[in-house]
Length: 107
Image (cartoon, rainbow, N blue to C red; front, side, top):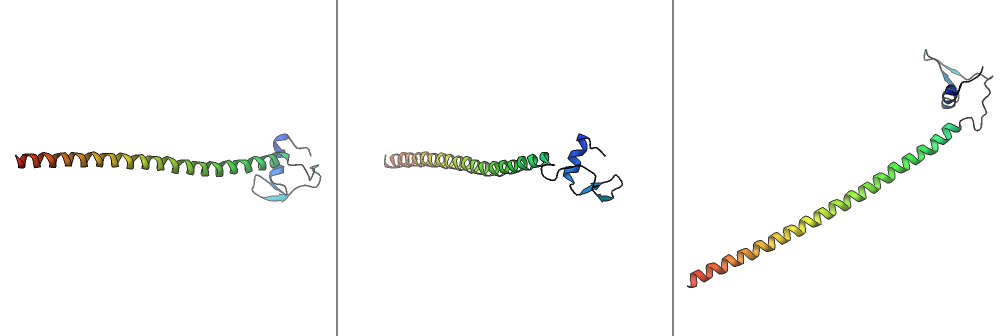
């Protein structure tokens, strides 16, 4: 009973069980010549790449959060400075208006 290359992945994925089209489960036949160690090199490599995928997701989430926090901090600081400048200009205008009003009253 030989295995085609497309069946090897299925047999490695379900090491102990063989899934039939009619959804019944039976154990692997004993005459299959699968090595116990190293029979699933594809899945070992996928496990490694899956680990790296999780690491990239976690690192991306952390870096994205830090970057987002930094950008929002800079926007907030810039807005605060702009509002302080506008308030300063407004106070200068008020003082000028008061001085003009005092000069008109005194003359």
